[in-house]
Amino acid sequence: MSEIGLVDVSIRDGNQSLWGATGLDTAQILEIAGTLDRVGFRAIDFTSSSHMAVAVRYFRNDPWERIRRVRAAMPHTPLQFITTGLRFIAWQQADPDFMRLVYRRLQANGIRRFVMLDPMHDADAVIEAARIIREEGDAEVMAALTFTLSDVHDDAFYAGFAAKLTPCPDIDRFYLKDPGGLMSPERIRSLAPAVRAMIGDKQLEVHAHCTIGHGPLTSLEAVSLGIDVVHVGIGPLGDGSSLPEANRMIANLREAGHTVAVDDTALRKMTEYWTRLATANGLPAGMPQAFDASFLRHQIAGGVMTTTLRQLEELGLADRFPAVIAETEQVRAELGYPIMVTPFPQMVMSQALFNVIGTARYAQVSDQVIRYILGKFGRPTRAVDARVEATILDRPRAREIADEADFPTLADLRRRFGAAMEDEEFLLRAVMPGDQVDAMLGAGRSRASHTPEAAPLLSLLKQLAARPAARDIVIERPGVRIALHAGAALD
Image (cartoon, rainbow, N blue to C red; front, side):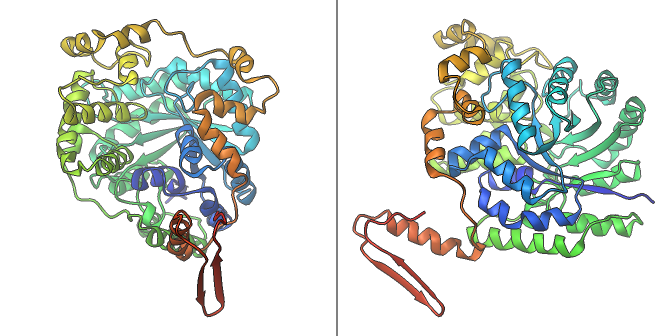
């Protein structure tokens, strides 16, 4: 039996799948980073450009600082960044020189592993991005074979894509990525050997979500086929629509006779911390999922589902969620079956949401969908429905987007923001609203964390501080005294 390595997805993919990507701030991650480093994971699925934007928008956390400080606290475990290639936060494909600067700063701050995920499986685009990454540092590069169900995406399709990438010296390894949890144990029995036959001695990993219950069994089947790195989530950040829960996966691997070289004590502490944090903040814990055949049709990844449900709840329309799910399946078919991985699930499900709550189907269409129809994201797997295409393009906004300039060059952006601006602030301002970046900079360095159990008390104090009528408030318990004075700011 073999030694099996693990990649922990809790901070990025688990957080995204179960907590809408907004469950963790920098301080909460730093609080436990040293323990996480001791577990012995092959890598940590740490962040993406979308998660960097969330850090700025929701927490006023500097995402570059987050990478630096966590890297310092975790010197032994590579931090992973997942990317679609030549895109950073904005939907639009960026200037290659701009992306070169992005990858340079990411590696300078501590990213040691990149996942290249091109949603159109464009081999040339993956190779170009991998080359830029390697020229700007020495991080490991892994190419994603993103699984979906369609007449086109058969074993030969994935084997052919892998064969195109294998000769590239800048691609070190591959992984079978199943964001929708659609890959069954039966399917991986034919898919994994077909891919391995094409990649030679380059390693193959498995990333199988648990959305309809396949993830744990598919991952175990992958190991029996010779795949020796499995992606997992810890405690409440595993299972559900996330990845297989780490403690159970390790137990099952060891039961099958495999060696899993992790520090069980450190893993137990990690599990306890995430559980305490989830309880204190009212965040849901992932639970083993029952099989749901409807996912084989709509193929919506867990993180997109939780985000859309939250949006409907905020609008008081949570009862329309089943209708949005059904509409998503129809929209995906009409748009030519885009693979349901970022940015397409967000695009497709948002359009379904507009169709359900709007006055008519496709009465409201996002700029991203228009760009997709215009071919700015690549060629769809199948042709877009002709009537839908005509409906979307027959509007003034579509003509404006068709005539819009490409993403500004790095030189143009430098002239706009000033050559003296620091690279990291510049990169954020180039793709995000200026007021959000201003608020982040105004917040300053992320402060030390607090224990999860303090979260309800701090939340109460912040609410009281926001009330003009609140005067001097004192909370006393044995050994603890907290005073809130009129006019004082609570941070």
